Amino acid sequence: MDPEANKIIEEQQKLMNKSPFLLIGFFLFFLADLVFFLVFQSNRLFMFNLNRSQENIPNLLITEVFSTVFYTIILIALIVYLIYLFIYMNKKYRTNHQVLKRIHGIADFFSVVPIFLFIVIIVNGFFLTLGQVDGESMQPNFCEHDTVVIIYNSKIENNDVLIIEYEESYLIKRLVGMPGDKLVVNDTGIYINDVLVESYIPHFLIEYNLIIPEGQYYFLGDNRSNSYDSRSIGLFSSDKILGKVVHNLSNKDCD
Image 1 (cartoon, one colour):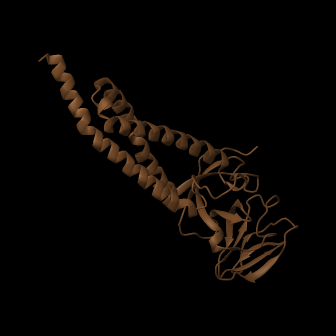
Image 2 (spheres, one colour):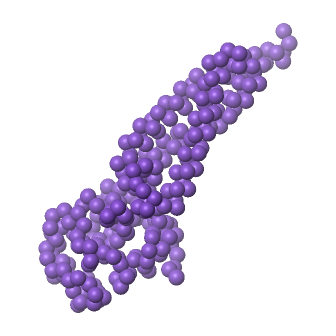
Image 3 (tube, one colour):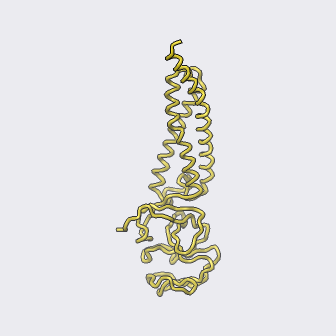
């Protein structure tokens, strides 16, 4: 037999042997992606969350671009693998060396898509996400459109910057008072457990002079003269705290 023909037959056999593993691996990871995708719909900061409207996404630009790109790539990959499965199951096409080789090469390229998506979903669902600051309430430390890293399930304490939910929207504010703290906020400053921590607060505030109840938190924006926070909204319950800001990726000076 022609050595070239032998080479093609051997290569064809190798492709046929690899195909089941490639197909099974892809669809198993795709199934895992789908399961975790549905599980994390309860996470309000999940980038692929389908339960929120355009108006209340805390990182709208990042979320839209990132999720749209991924939806497009995974759709292309799924179409490629459905074609690949059809060719593998159809004797007429799978015995055509050029057809099988071409679709195998394309499928091999897209095989990393569900694996990479799985990693992104796990990290974003369990550990962290990205957010984009909207507004000027946290200047000068956080400017409008700054991109920040937000982690979940982290121990929090006074002076942490947190993401909190309020009436179908998301706010970025600094934690000033925790449950059990004796908090006084008036025109002379902020006192925590009788200790002065800040000597100036704009005069238009609503004064506070109580021990913060269990499960409640008091937040202020760093831009004290231009912030919608606990001075007008009141205390926030613990279930409204979605994550802690740990890093500002933009790190630029505010205009």
